Length: 104
Image (cartoon, rainbow, N blue to C red; front, side):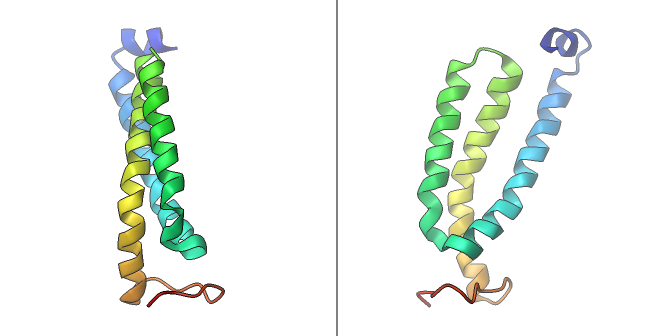
């Protein structure tokens, strides 16, 4: 498959589509994770990022290595977004979870 994509100059396009999908997937994950667990789940995304970086280095195929790199750094970015999501909830832009207690 990689050979076909490379031969037909489609590898960059597939990586771009994969990047778009991974980043798009992380937006609702941030909202749901914050709603259910707050900022306390940041370490899960740190662990996912470290695993993604490690696998990206280990795997030799460009497509999978690149997509794992995108996944890893999207996980790291999610940590920042979790704390920004807290600010958005404080401002009333997103609903609070009535089953959780908030520090604010």
